[in-house]
Image 1 (cartoon, rainbow, N blue to C red):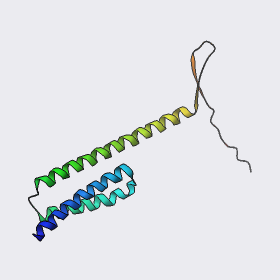
Image 2: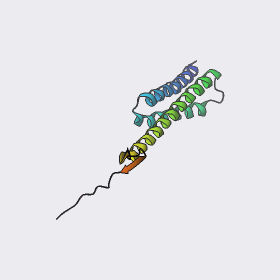
Image 3: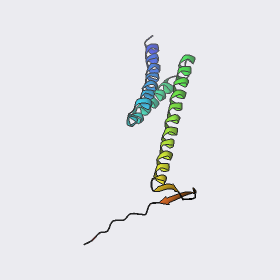
Image 4: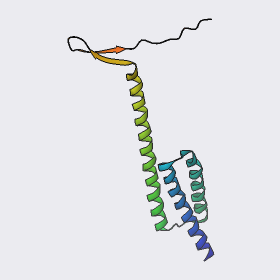
Length: 120
């Protein structure tokens, strides 16, 4: 009986850690994610050391939550990559002025490189 309660508590702990991981991915701070992942991995290793046959319900819940967190992390990475691309695009266009000639043809005018004179 006690062994079953302890085992059930171990399963619940892993699932709670996955839920906490989700909240950190969504709300931050992401600096806390590493510690949660390490705790989760240690909890899963503890279960695997003591048991050979895991309940189907636990495995289903574990898989669903792990896949959910994986999708969130991939979406976060895609957002970061998109942000970096946008920043690069803005930086490229920052020093360029687009205007038109008297004939209506588009002309890109680059701003001159600015330097600072240092005088002694």
